[in-house]
Image (cartoon, rainbow, N blue to C red; front, side, top):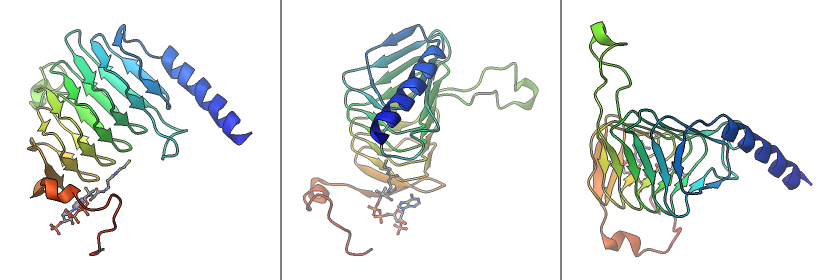
Length: 203
Ligand SMILES: CC(C)(COP(=O)(O)OP(=O)(O)OC[C@H]1O[C@@H](n2cnc3c(N)ncnc32)[C@H](O)[C@@H]1OP(=O)(O)O)[C@@H](O)C(=O)NCCC(=O)NCCS
């Protein structure tokens, strides 16, 4: 009974946000578990099976995923097998955002490809914000509350720790964490030989 109520409640919320979406260039059919608002004059592409929203997980019922391709040239491309957890938001002003296959994003992650405003105080509202394409490789694990800023590239298989603000590019197979951002160890195939789900004995 509860499950059915939950399903209907969420379905109605999903429909509401679909009606509030105005992006006319959406390609692909993601699996939508949380309300998603798709906005802007640019293009939003979902390749293969993209999962938007996770249950059970925080904010499932009181938030939404927001994807905006703001200008006509903006392209947001999301690869096959991506899981985007609840309340993630992506805003492309024009340079573009690309997320590789199989990448997992935690709750409340933010990706933006521009500064949003000109940094010159005389031109905050009139100037052109600096921007740069954001490219996230395949199989990246992005922890919850991570923020990824303009021009950043993240190499495949890397891990971005919870709460990190990523303002510089990260090579592949890297653990990156902290503010200011630090690169820790580089992973090797040896790292992945341990039993799945094993507890770190040091903790
Ligand atoms: C990224 C993560 C998996 C790494 O775990 P780990 O392998 O146990 O990390 P380590 O213990 O080797 O940490 C390496 C260093 O990074 C630091 N670190 C790890 N996570 C950090 C974080 N979120 N912020 C700041 N520093 C962090 C550690 O303190 C350590 O620093 P030191 O070298 O100075 O001692 C883990 O930190 C993490 O963020 N887990 C949560 C992921 C998440 O949000 N998932 C959402 C699922 S929906």
